[in-house]
Amino acid sequence: MQKSSSSSSLMVRQEFCTKWKKGLQIYSAYNKEMTIMERKRAIKLSADVAIAATRSSTTQWSRAVVADVSTSAAGAARIAAEEILGRKLSTERRKKIVRRRRRRKGAVSSSAAAVAKRVVWNRRRVLKRLIPGSGWKKLDETSLIKETLDYIASLQVQVDVMRHLANAAETCLHHQQILL
Image (cartoon, rainbow, N blue to C red; front, side, top):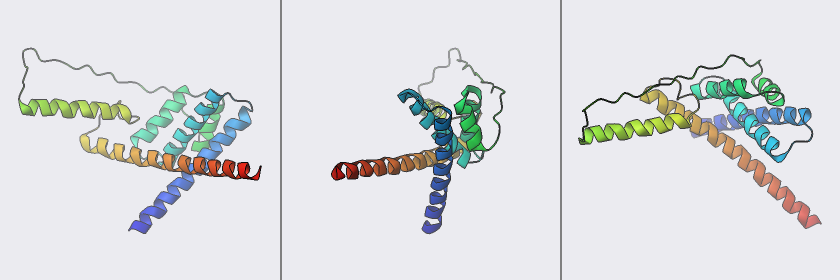
């Protein structure tokens, strides 16, 4: 069982790395002289779209990342995102649903159950803000937890790949300094 999980994780990392690399290549071909901030945006956008593309629209957060890119990206960013995803991005904007909280007049309960319910509600609200796409869809607790776990696993893949690249670059620089 452990072997299957690690080979699956390796495949996800390889797919992410391939898609991320493709996005970065398109960016650098489109804009040869990028500023530090443009390079930072290119790296982040390429990484976000690549990890969302590895999920192939199976989760709400991955669809939300793609929707955000489709409404905000232009030029090289849009071309890179379309190439990573392997399809044209939609140009229609996603409607943002705004809900207002109604307060009950005169109903102030300080029971332990009411306090616990308020704490859970607040934590759920914060969690929905952190997970792309979960804030504009009504999710039950189980779906929210599943989305959160999937998003955390995907972010862990991003971090692992970036950490390996940083370590490889550091080792390469160290060897170059020794040779000089």
